[in-house]
Length: 328
Image (tube, rainbow, N blue to C red; front, side, top):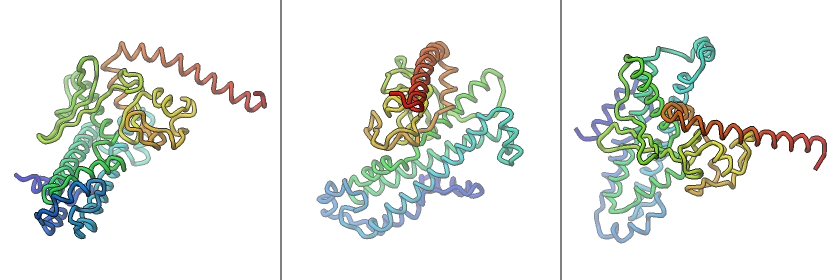
């Protein structure tokens, strides 16, 4: 079965959930109207790489329809996925009293099995849409004899509308591995998402998820600042993951003030992108997974960071008291 048909059938099955998707069929029709395989394409292909909204032959169809439509659809898919995943994980990590309050407010519906199934569905939704986006951009490049599709993908990553960059996808994968371990210990439980695992190669951990033949997601869990396994991990808006204290250090803020206090000029140590700290997401499911998988390391790191956090908090409040009393 061709992917286009497979994708259409999948999205039709999700109609009851009212999930946005990529207009795969519509975008293919746009490309069919612009099949002009002459030498002009190959001559101008490289010139257009830096401008992903202009096709090599200055095609008005592509300029006005293809890329703007795809960008809008990618944003809608990402927004829906993030909202649904955040809601699900909030329920899973809630305490007993918090779950009671959610039930009272009508936010908690279904049971544990339904929660796991919803998580599986969300991961599948993210990956199949990622494949659809990749395939339609590849088709664009094939028709136009260009590399604009790849350039557009890079631009989408810089704009933070690439769904595989979402911290909530990382959290959902960790959620399923946590549930899988709980099921293994209890010896019973609902069917889980296959293909998700925590791998350790040469002492370096990573999350792996492979649900389709054509896509595999690997998330490195080594902090590029301290060069150790991420502890109390946070994901910046650019998608890179760091230890919370390492991220605070990179953002030139104290742990008391937090990453939201970071100046806009502060940049990600890896990609050098600015304005990435304020919207950082704490990866609580991943934190839980790593604490269970590396108990000895976690205990040592916890003791070390507790001392550092106490010291930073003490210095912060001492400076606040001096400022309040007008003492330099």
